[in-house]
Image (cartoon, rainbow, N blue to C red; front, side):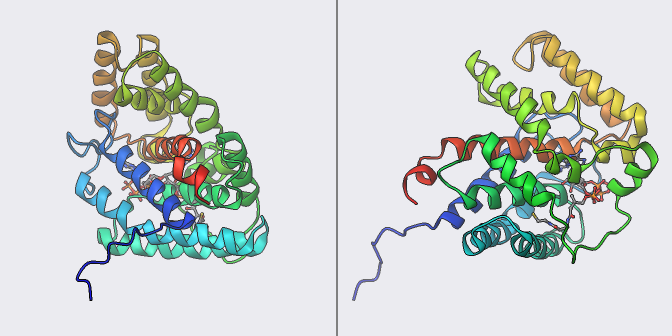
Length: 290
Ligand SMILES: CC(C)(COP(=O)(O)OP(=O)(O)OC[C@H]1O[C@@H](n2cnc3c(N)ncnc32)[C@H](O[C@H]2O[C@H](COP(=O)(O)OP(=O)(O)OP(=O)(O)O)[C@@H](O)[C@H]2O)[C@@H]1O)[C@@H](O)C(=O)NCCC(=O)NCCS
Ligand SMILES: Nc1ncnc2[nH]cnc12
């Protein structure tokens, strides 16, 4: 009898996608310096969040992402049965998150966005470019889950007050903030040789220039949203995170958003979605092994 099993463990498609999703969440949390968000430097505009909690929350979501990908493989097509299955798994994922964080909302928006994307990717691994995956995710998001509770969430409250499009609409439209802003900027900054961390920061800023982030609206109203969008554009106009002037503008944006208590949590989730799609497009195991 051998003490060690030296057989290589084969990883399933669902496990691989869950790994990629959790990696994207951890990379988003670690990326620094992000304006007013939790990162390696500190807690940004938050009193109840810190980096360790973001990591623990990300890891607690692995089973939910895996189960969503498995549901996609089981149902095999976009339809109400799959939509309602991932809705149930998403709600269970939220409970796992809240149990891990002692009730703090770390990743509600991320469960929604990355959950839809993982499901959409698993539905067709031969068609994994960002446009195709987000289109399938949008078709899923447009289906009405009959079992979804409709609480008066922060997003719902600011939708009423400002008519803002929130996380639901972002997904139903095929993640325009990711496909038209975050991902192209990430690739442009990489191609310009700005370095991976700066390219990711630039991707986040590109998302922030146009997003109706319901976290910012809820905490800091239209003044906060205006500060976020214009401040992010100012960094990019100054040459982005890799340039000295861009870094100064980024520091000013951080200070300004913290003073306004305006945390762009929605933009952070969409950066994680950007990083996930980028990985799905390039992942050798995903392309080759299934
Ligand atoms: C469809 C849902 C997304 C629910 O949407 P709704 O808008 O009604 O709900 P919210 O509770 O407000 O959550 C939306 C979260 O999405 C992020 N977000 C914000 N704006 C956007 C945007 N324009 N586009 C995309 N994503 C966006 C954001 O998440 C991050 O912020 C969280 C913290 O925010 P907040 O709730 O304001 O803060 P709290 O800590 O509660 O309070 P304070 O800090 O102010 O004290 C953080 O978690 C980030 O993740 C929004 O919070 C969907 O959730 C849903 O229907 N779920 C049901 C289950 C389901 O069907 N799942 C599907 C499985 S795929
Ligand atoms: N890094 C971060 N800081 C604060 N809220 C977030 N929501 C998702 N990621 C976040």
